[in-house]
Image (tube, rainbow, N blue to C red; front, side, top):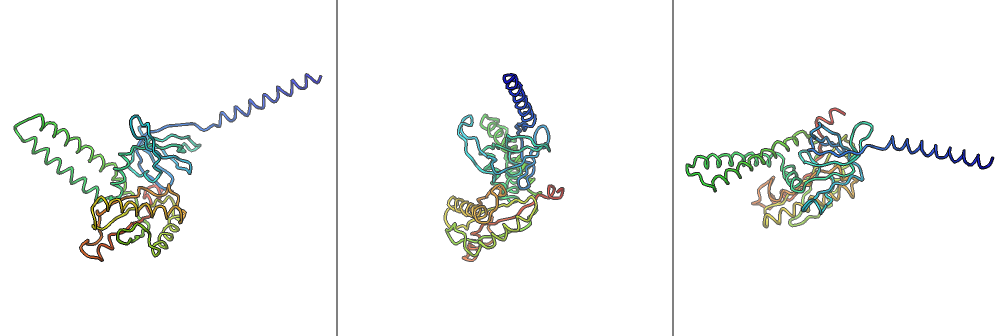
Length: 304
């Protein structure tokens, strides 16, 4: 009798484990992998354009954003979610929730594409206009070469190179024109001393106020772009403007409590984009700055 009781009890326990295991198996989240281009972004939500249509991707605290570099992507580098701006190509790995949204575990981007997107995002309209001008110049060069009756191998190679350059720059204009879909809700300007990358105490208060205002907005993003005056060489000024922008990002995230995934593409514009002349002390003072903007996507915010 005792043996039969143990046998029955053991069988019941096995059934319970089987039922639990079956339930877990049924409710296990579906894994997925998609490739595409960021079409829009609002805070922690991305709309990714893929061959199968638009996919909604959600970012989380543990979402890893990385760049596969080197031959066959052997060396990997974490880049953070700040690079995730409209127009960027990427691959997303994660799970699908009950709403059909993808909870991103790993996002992989291309380093060269990141650099291009950051440059264009930082310059926005001025950079797009410059690229458009370059396209016109390249097309004029192409027509001039084609008109040359002496068809040489060198000329043919040059024409092919210009054709390729035209295609690439035109594609960049089309990809990043979506940045016009964002409204600037609020902005602040941080001024710096000559050669300095330290945030003045007087400007820390306005950064806190901007961060507090952002947190009260739906689906916000914060754009940070650094600038320098024309003192010194261009390479040094570009590096200095980058360090200023990164210090502002660090202050917003570490002191003001802004999640890093809410900040997009810290830009380094160097001497480009002055707001005043570099010929005077007062003008140079105006140009040593970091511009911080709260952005909201027009379409996605309107649909909330």
